Image 1: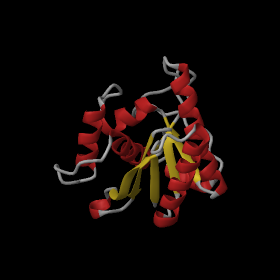
Image 2 (image 1 turned 90 degrees about the vertical axis):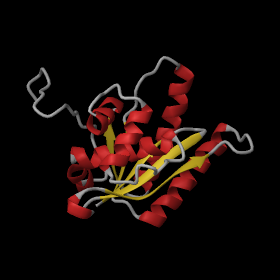
Image 3 (image 1 turned 45 degrees about the horizontal axis):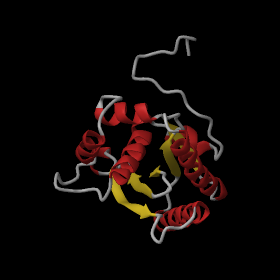
Image 4 (image 1 turned 120 degrees about the vertical axis):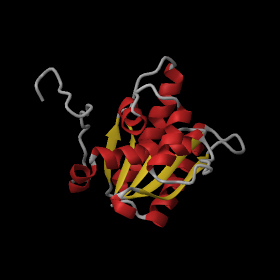
Length: 187
């Protein structure tokens, strides 16, 4: 099973492909990178086209089974939230047109699963992604967006969101909690 983790943005977009079942069944990093979408100061539509085309090339090259990204969240800055929503829309549309399942995970869930703390810093997340993927400690992700994408893909594998996501190209948002925790409604 291969997962493409994406940290969407309109200036930079990180991506990482992880494969399940490396040494001792551990996830392995197949490839990762950062799409730089703002070279030459393009307008918003051109940046979204670059995001779509760049991730399309990644899909063609690495053939993932699932696309994983963080679920939408509401930040303090409405303009930033709108731009993030546009980038997420481009990723979701690309996955849908390719018939790929989508796993959406909350930002806090990703940090909790990878770093053990829902408020972990980007540096902590990157360091622990390196450890979890058994990468050389000197391995340096080009940008925090790239390490965040690897964290999202890793979390999708850890959460085992994949079997449900792979069964159908239409994926309902999955409510996730730490092991042993329950929602108040009993589910």
